[in-house]
Amino acid sequence: MNYSLMTKLAAVLFIVFFVSPFFGATAERSNREIGGSVERTTPGQALASESIGEASQLEFLLVRNQVLKQELLLASKPQLYFLLNLTEKRLQLKARGMVLKEWALTRVRRWGPHPRLEPLTLGKKSALFAPKRKAIKPGENQSKDTFELEALELKDMPTIFTLNLEEGIKIYVRPKPQGFLARLAHVGLHFRWYGWFPLRNMYRRIAGKPFISLEITVSSPVEAKAIYWAMLDGLKGLIYSVPKS
Image (cartoon, rainbow, N blue to C red; front, side, top):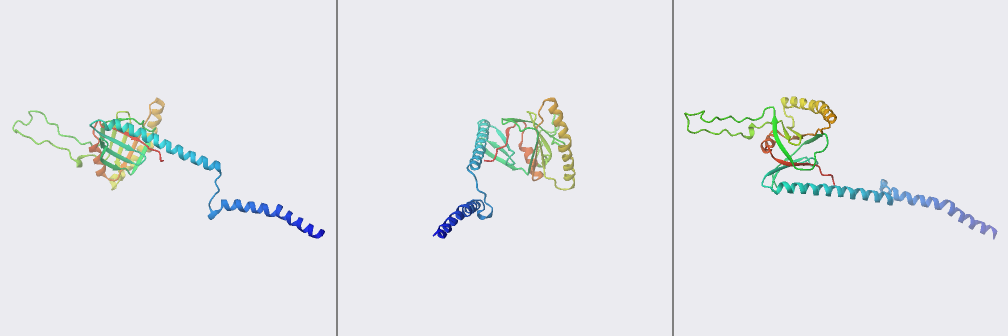
């Protein structure tokens, strides 16, 4: 009788002190290693992840709403305007909200702070080999009653140029280097970006004037010429980035 009681007591002690801890550890491990790689998420971690997702979504909606408000101001007037989306690497020429022309950019780089989200105005374009129209003086050709007006065509446009915005922002446009001369010019642009721009940025920061420069690269020289042709002096537009939702 005493032997039977001791046997039952030993069985209870074995279950309490040995089986239970291993059972608990096995259950916890099964939650952590289902499929060999799934970690168990605590309620606090799940709540933090959800809060980050909601904050990202809210930021996306706020910026997108601001972009639409600013574009509405541009689209309400009978004029062309441009939109430069740095996030999606896309340049659009629009009128009344309708896309007239769109260029996919292969690369976008920026020096300095992000431009303010407000309408910007394109000033003069500059290029090393800018197209020039022949000057015609009244009364110069007296022997002829008629003359032909020289029209600048797309083939006359430069492939490497700068869009100078009146707000002090410069946008450098160039195509992907193709051929020996283009690659040689690319080396010079590389030294300008990593050599001259840092010095200029430091000087402007000391002077208290922000230095903002962007460089956009398109796929071909034809695309670059088309941008020079379309971006008229005085054209207004927006430069913006939209965070991922």
